[in-house]
Image 1 (cartoon, helix red, strand yellow):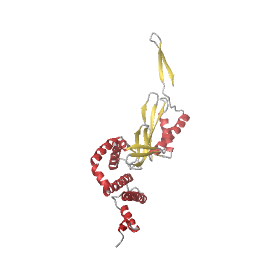
Image 2 (cartoon, rainbow, N blue to C red):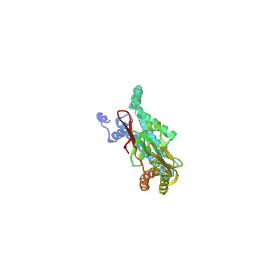
Image 3 (tube, helix red, strand yellow):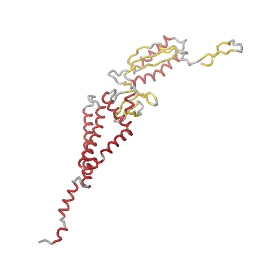
Length: 304
């Protein structure tokens, strides 16, 4: 018969088997840690797979047949769903967390209400982002005009995230606008089937100047500009207090070209007007001085 104290000893093989069982037993601390790492790694691999699949699709379909605004938005939602699904499965697998979740069910309801009130702006941006995705007033790559605290901004939609819309301006600035603002304000989408844009450039001349000559100079200068596709006209639009305003109208390839034409014509036409003797007047007023008896001394120009 074996000695009475032989039960106090265990073989190295049995110790190793017991350790392996504890590592894969979700009821133990070691097992819970191992499963946590496994679930996190699986979720990380799945999100990287989603990103890689989207990147391959982007390279394969670069001709614009896929709406990348929707794809990028859904990609982020998919990543969040993957991590939430992994967390939910992990909580159901670990017995301690399962019991804890049952005990704290009422507390979770209260916490969700508190979090909803605290993060209502964030949730509003998320809901607005989903609305922008469904209604599609603009897409990634479209040129839009919006009103910001700094004034009117024109930029290209660079990205549509879960909470913000990012615009890139012509001078390479990034304008970050909350989705809730983008969904409620008036946005001008400059990208259409016909991207042509009309450059409207006003010029004021004095009442003594020759309107026909000034109009001829404006039209000739616009036709000579390489970015002008067609001159639509140059009517008199305003009879101002000190000037007659001619509005030159010319079609350009897009909004950026129209802006460059406007800036160039201001400088070029100013030089042509100076050479032709056509005055671009400054605002002025007449001041009438009266003596103590109320008799006027006639108009006296206060400045021009």
